[in-house]
Image 1 (cartoon, rainbow, N blue to C red):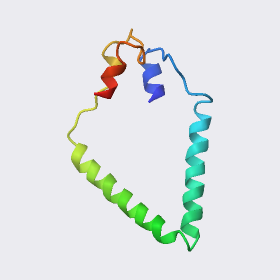
Image 2 (cartoon, rainbow, N blue to C red; image 1 turned 90 degrees about the horizontal axis):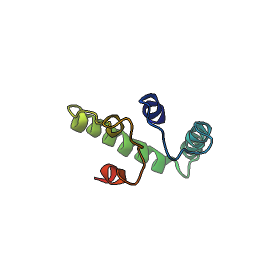
Image 3 (spheres, rainbow, N blue to C red; image 1 turned 120 degrees about the vertical axis):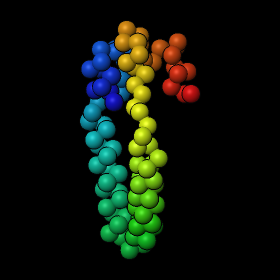
Image 4 (spheres, rainbow, N blue to C red; image 1 turned 180 degrees about the vertical axis):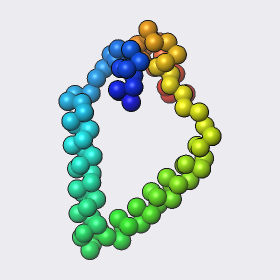
Length: 93
């Protein structure tokens, strides 16, 4: 999302530290923990049930959102700051 916003010409007022390295580190850490849980006999059942529920929810979300249009609020006013005090409320609605 950050690349899309910056490509649209919007200057972010707050940026995540070490982007995108922290993001990739967190993804790899989560995958490592899930891999360990899948290999470990003590956690295998819970991991498989979690993967099953996640798969069902993803499939359901594709059916629910397939006709929905993507809204990009940062493209409405390209000169405005995305996270300034005037439009923070837009994202919470």
